[in-house]
Length: 438
Figure 1: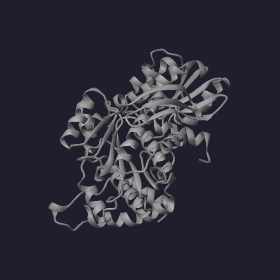
Figure 2: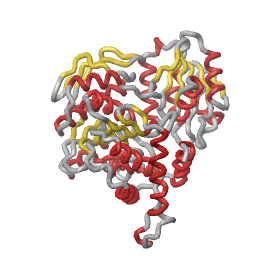
Figure 3: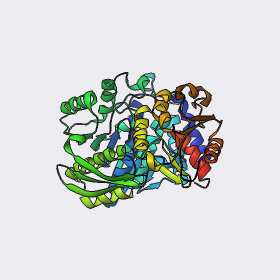
Figure 4: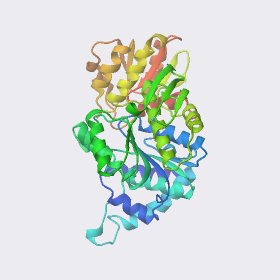
């Protein structure tokens, strides 16, 4: 089996979509020898910031000397990015070996190939269920001694909920995936709070009704809750595209001039969650001290989130793909507007996202806009987006990201900023154009 054949098989499983429930993943990991048992996990759920928070936590644990596993989704450029050990992506040969093990296992033990009695038959694992099993087995084989797992969708019925974490993190909660998670914040919070386990500390930045749902779930499971915005106080010393520096005071320590490599005020709150989770992990027996927290936050790398990939003109990539994420992006742009020059927005979005609200937030900040089609089946026709712009700025519609970037560069002066946003698919396509060797 080649790597292309392995990933071809994995991607073919997307036809199953997202299937709520743990029965299939529980059987899959049982067939693999329950590789998740005994690994100390931190489980990260939430609406926005899950990936950044998970990446920061991984960096902190590595700085503390742990051999770490990190499982996140989606990827930007390569499937291998989803599964990492000690900061390094799994290699293609390991993907092939894992697929060669799991593919026949699935054919034997799951419908339609199984010969088990009808009452015991379970559907074939989905793409995410199988990759979750792969990640857990890889972490066991590579003998990680700490792992950070990002929830795929929701929490309660997500495949990652097969783990037993030492700390649970819920970043924030906004309306998203309503067709799967519920139509109200309370319903969505209930799904995400499903990662709470008995006695396991919960660290969250969720507010209002969502916070109350999490607290009720935690009380049912005798799990202590740290509401980070209340337990910690911080002040931003300086902030820019190169990152930011804050002073932070919490129940355990005070951190003067704490450097955060990721830009944006929203990343400050994520970093505070990371500090709270790291301190909770220390109370659970992890050897994570202030020096590790400082080093991890200062050194973390997380592409596609306010990532600068070019200068003169400055080119910034951001994968915000829902209104809450776009609001955080718009806040950053507003705060630093004077330093950005003219802002040229290159925007491509998936048709099932709330692109009208996203454009209402971004269009007033842009001097010119280039609407394009992300390289995805669900990509929205850019021509259909024009009415949502409300007459703000100059607008060009082009069919693909390469042409969109060329148009933006032609319009930009050296002191201007080109912002690529709307979808991680759009960001990934831009990275391939701008860094073809990546």
